[in-house]
Image 1 (tube, rainbow, N blue to C red):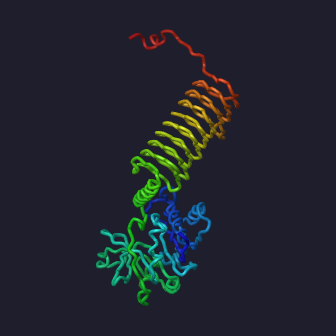
Image 2 (tube, rainbow, N blue to C red):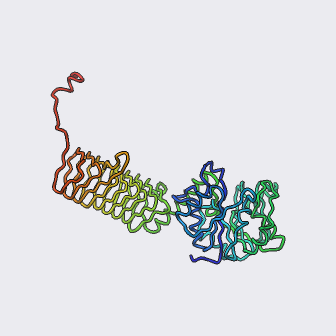
Length: 434
């Protein structure tokens, strides 16, 4: 979608006390990215003028979003003197004639779900939906297809509390309306806050056009607690997995699979049950078996698992990683590592076989070092490779060997076992005959 003639304001100043967390509410993650990230990403599909209003933990919010976006305006709200949604928009000068106001705790919003605000024409467009249990929401009073007024639950009368049409919390205002009425907002209410919804009452008195836009609850779901967060995660995960299955990814028992927002799939890929893929991982023509975890890694024409763990910066090409193998910052090209190994800070080339129980000893307690293994190397089971270490092509490492030499030249066999001893009848001397 191209940028439209619309400015977007995202309200991200609140503490989110119901989250029971020291972290700012908008920084809690949904599918690997902060809630606010998802909203900004969708907003950028619609507008070239986006302003985020911050206050609580503003430095953390600005710094975190700066990791993803470099063209967003941040404005600090004066929450002490001008609390509430109305106070949040007081010092903003929108670029365009229509202004869309979003909430920073609605991570399930999509650009498609916001299209109604772009296509409808009115002085004010407000999102609403009907709920069987409207508790906690502001009530919207509609007559003759226009909004009469909005009342917050804490300020509502008994009759108003019986209304089931509720405020979904997103509005599109004409810039003229905002400029006219924001200076007139007052905080004469139970919470002593400045409500953006009071503009509706003032505009209604002046016979401005105020129309409701009925929306679906899923896209406009607010996240105010850890329970809400978990429910939003399920919805986001279903969207991510549905999109990739529609693009040809095979998933066994998809409800058991977790895929973060930044993961990319290419070609023919299959995922077995209970696997987890995170970060900016790229999976190309590969198979991830049951119970495996892939973090910030790349797989091409490879397979891993079951129960494998690819830690960040692993790169597999034409490689088999078996069960209970862990890799970290490792580049494997044409390698077989069938089971029970740790390969960290390693570079391993084609034709090499890693025996069960092999460990790259990459950390000496202070620094980490790399292990470089060439082509066609055979590493026997239960071997320890003490880095920094280079093993050149065509080398054999005998089972049970600890390799400590800096470089092993091509053609060599490395063997460091102690000589086996047999002590006759020791069992009977120790336990006695039975």
